[in-house]
Length: 578
Image 1 (cartoon, rainbow, N blue to C red):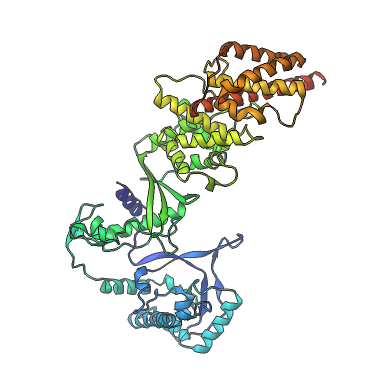
Image 2: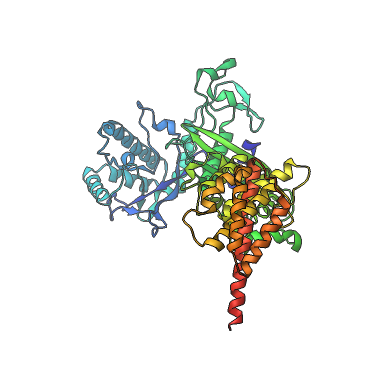
C-alpha cells in the first residue's frame, strides 16, 4: 500500500512529468536578440533577506542522472544547467574535468542548435543564446563577472533573451518532449506485473535517485535497488526483482522528492506525512509544534461537538526515511484515517498533561516533540538511540505504548541531573510512558498517573517519591541551603533501591522535624506522617523501570504541590498588607 499511497499523492498534486523536473537555479544571463550581454549575471534567490538565501526553484527539462555520468558520452541539460556545462565555466580545483566539461558544453550548444531549427516562433531566442555561447570574448567577460560575484561552477544557470526566459517557452518545451519521446528506448525485456499497479508491463531496470534523504548520497538515494549477485536468483536482474513500470517509478519518485522537501527532519531521519485529500490541519503538525490553541481545539472537540475535520474515513499516511549510503531505509510506515489519528493525538496530549513545577497547569506548547526529546539528553539529540524519536512520533500517531527505551533514557537523565529533576517535559514523558504501560499491559489502571498530586494513591513507588520530596523539604526548613543535600546525595539510590537508603533518611527526618517550626513546617510534618502511615515500615527493596518512573512522578508532584502552597501563602500575605 505504500507505493499506491505515493502514486495517489503524485496524481493529486499533479507530479510526475517524465520530461521536466524542479531544480534550484541561481543565475540568469540577460541577452538581446543578437546574442549580446545586456547586463551582468542576475542572481535568482528565494527569501533574499534570509541569512543564507536559497536559489530559486524552477522547472527545467529532465534527463536521467546516469546520462550525465557516462564518461565516454558527455551530456547536458537542455536550456538550464550548471555553469560548467552551460557556459564552460571552469572549476579551478578540478582541472582533470576540463575535457569532460568541454564535451558537455558542446552538447549543450547542440541542443540549442537543434531547437533553433525546429521551433519557428521561439527558435530565434535559442539562436541568440547559441550566438552568445559561440563568442569566446563574451564568455570570458561573463566568467569574470561570475568570479567577481563568487559564483560556483555547480550553480545552475539559464538565459533570458529580450525579456523572454528560455525556460518559459512552450515551443521549446514541446521540442524537448518530442526529442525525449524519440530518444526513449523501447523496452525489449520480458513483461512483468508492476507490484504497485498490478499491470503487465516492462519494468524499469534501475530507478532514479530520491533527493535530500538524510544519511544518503549527495546525488540522491534509491528506494528500490539491486546491485549484488545475490539478487540474481531465478534469473532476475536488477529492477526485475521488484518490478515497477516507468510511469509508476516516476510518480513514486516525484511524490517522495516533494514530500522529502516538505518533511520534518530530526537527527538523521526525515518524517513524511500526508492525507489522501488536502487537510487544513495535520495531526502530525500538532505533535511536532504543540500549538496551544490548536491542541485546545482538538481536546475540546468531543465536548463542543466541533471536530477539527469532517468525521469521514479519509486516509492518513506517515513514513520515516533515512539513508544508508545509496539506499533508502524505511524506518516506519503508518496507514490510518484522519479521525483515528486525531483521536490518538488527542490522547497523546492528555497522557502528557502534567502540572508545572510551580503547580500551575503546563501549556501544551511545552510538550512539542522537540522539547520532549531534549528532556532525555544532556546536550544534543545525537546522544539518543536513533530509533527513539521515530518510536515516540509513531506512538503518538498510533496511540500505542511508548518504548521502554524512552522511559529508560528519561530516568537516566532524571538520576544524573542534579539541578534539573523538575523538567516538566521529561516528567510528562515519564507519565505518558507509565499511563500507556498501565493501559495496555495491566488489567486495571493503578489510578495514580494524574496531572497533579494524587494523595489517594497507594502505589509504594509513588509514595516513596513523595516521601523523598518531604525529606528534601524538611532538610531545607531545618538547615537551609546546603552544598550536598538529600537530593544530590541520595536520589539515584532512593529511586532504584529504596529499602537501602530510606531508613537512614527516615532517621534524619526525625531530627529535622524537631528543628522545624512554623505553619508551613507543620504542613510538611502532616505529609510526612500521612505518607509514612500509608507506606508502613516496608520499603520496596528495588524498583524496576516503571517503579522508578512512579518514584520520579511522586517526587515531582509533591514538589509542585509545595511550591503551589508556598505561592498561595505569599499571595495571601501580599493581599493582607494592601
